[in-house]
Length: 116
Length: 113
Image (cartoon, rainbow over all chains, first blue to last red; front, side):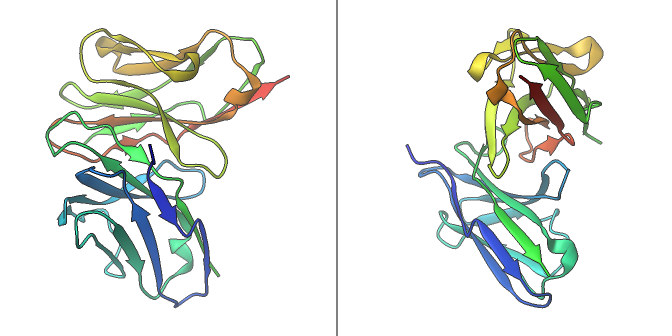
């Protein structure tokens, strides 16, 4: 079946531009996660949705980062006024289970963002 | 606080040789443990996971890992490495009642022909 898809795969932005990154989770998956992976590092948690509810946004680095999942399926991560330090790969993952379950997260291919 | 340590940043092995990638975690209760592989330009692919039960778990592509509670370790092994195994490997810990994974910094595997 179809896995997690993300678009665009690559994005080049000029410093100060706004960007929007899209994630299509596996159909029926309740939980959706965003991670940021800097070059040479492991992914770091940004935010978590259970259906349309954003239950945790503690990993978002600043108020320039905003995520939504209005219908409990597709999610968008928006970065306003991009800065060079925002350059990274942004990974989306989805999971079938609710919080507290034995959740396995399935990852998309990521969006590589380069801010010039 | 939970943490994951992958002490080896780079590992080089010859094709056909055995492989062991180390992972140590810090967490007070029984963790959920995962190994993922990431090829260049790709997302993370799940190799195997440990939730409970048998401490030796089998995964895809001939990989296995052993959970050792006394050593807080979850090392990944493969008896004979193939050139296509060259990639970056990430160990991650998850916990019951939470949802976020904590990842290690990764081990980059190079395979010599």
